[in-house]
Image 1 (cartoon, rainbow, N blue to C red):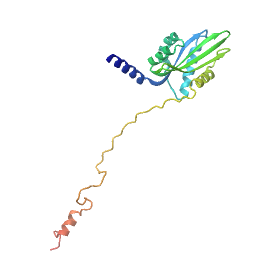
Image 2 (image 1 turned 180 degrees about the vertical axis):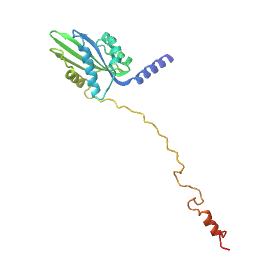
Image 3 (image 1 turned 90 degrees about the vertical axis):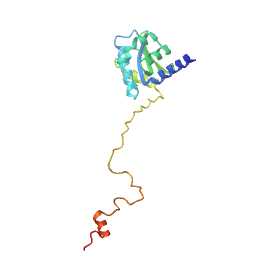
Image 4 (image 1 turned 60 degrees about the vertical axis):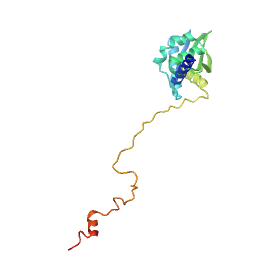
Length: 196
């Protein structure tokens, strides 16, 4: 029983610790010229970030690129790669030569649920020199109807300023200091300053 509770607590902690970020990782690059996959990855990161999503940096993603390539299109495996990158979602993509052209495919995966949320594929006669328009179409298809999570920023609590003045009037039963006559006026009313 205690082992089961420990496993449940561990998995809950992992799920709560994931940042609301998107990891962009390639899982295939068959028959593509050198640099094509890297340019497409950079373009996809830029496109996702332009839509106000937080993206895992290229340096962080590159460390897990080999693991993503070993996953292929296996959703659970790609979800594990995303969890190791501390990302809530994975945008995994592949480029492959098909006949004389290329096939570009992409998946959006929820890493907590190990679930495929959306997919995109497009056949191209040749890989474009500028992958920007292709990235725009892919991200529009994958993120359709999704809004980036709201970031809650903690605010600093500022203590009240101390002042010598009381914020509220005095509540004693006697007259306040401002209502009490000054000492010379009191003495005159008591006869101490009367002319002799």
